[in-house]
Length: 184
Image (tube, rainbow, N blue to C red):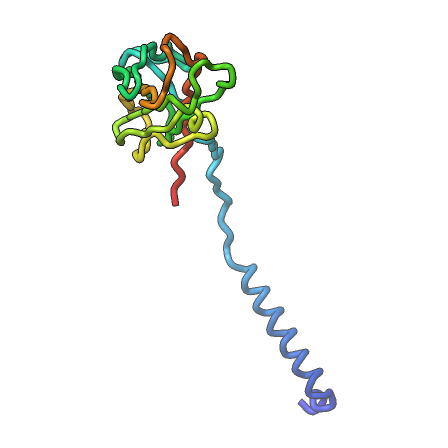
C-alpha cells in the first residue's frame, strides 16, 4: 500500500474508477443474452374517404346525378328535390357544398335565387351567389362511415324579383365534398 500513496489523490481516484468500470462492464456482458424477436411485417395504410351521390336511395354514383328542375314563383320555395349522400369510405366525413360556375350571363341574377339544402341537420340557405363564392357545411353532424344522408334541395326566387317571367338561371352543379373528421 505504500506505493499507492506516492500517486496524487486524483490519479488514485481515476485508477479506482477505471478498475470499477472494468469490473461492472465485465459482469454485465457476462449475463446471458436472448435471441432477437420482431413484429414483422408492419403494414400501415391510410383510411379511405369516399362520397357517393344518388337520386334513388339504393343507386349511387361516384360522379353526379341529375339535379332539380323547377319553375319558380317569387317568394315561394320550389318543391323539395330529394337526393342521397353515402359515405362508402372508412372515415367519418364532414360534408360541405359549393356551387361552381359563372352566372354573369344568367337572365336571373344569382343573388335573386336562394338555394336551401337540408341533410337532416336543418336548413342551410344561401343565395346562388354566396354558394358560388364559397362553401358551407351542410350538416352539423358527421356522415359516419357506411351511412347515408337523406337530403333535400329547394330553390326560392326572391320576392323582390321583377320582370315578365320566363327567364332562366344558367344551369349549375352543386358539388359536395367530404373531409375526414379529425380526432382531437
